[in-house]
Length: 139
Ligand code: CMP
Image 1 (tube, protein in one colour):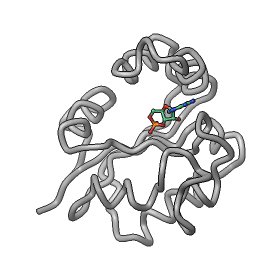
Image 2: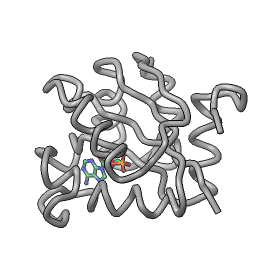
Image 3: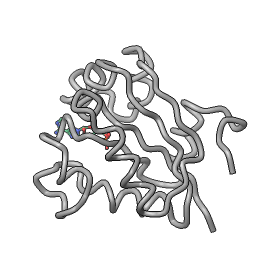
């Protein structure tokens, strides 16, 4: 059965003109782009999105980074989309990400790691709802 997951093209990728390459990668992998928008998040929106990380040492750096430029928000649809996106993104730390993954290919550091993807079906539902209304996600 198809799932929908959230992917965010992060500011380090936005600054390096990587939008097309990343979206192209998802299309090649067979995902459908079910929703997409570009948005400059406020610091408060970034903090709300990453609320589970509040209190961690990297929270300030993380939320300042995510709100530093516009980002591309995408709903990716496909079979097993949550896990498949995690596999295509690679490990959080690009130095540990497998060859050929988006993070291994493009990311420079754990803090500026190019792409975000929901880590479970439950997170995907919350994260998609944070940025998209139900009617904005096409089937
Ligand atoms: P992401 O998958 O978007 O979700 C949480 C983010 O926190 C993660 O990507 C990393 O970019 C960031 N992160 C996790 N651990 C660290 C860390 N030790 N130092 C800096 N950033 C981190």
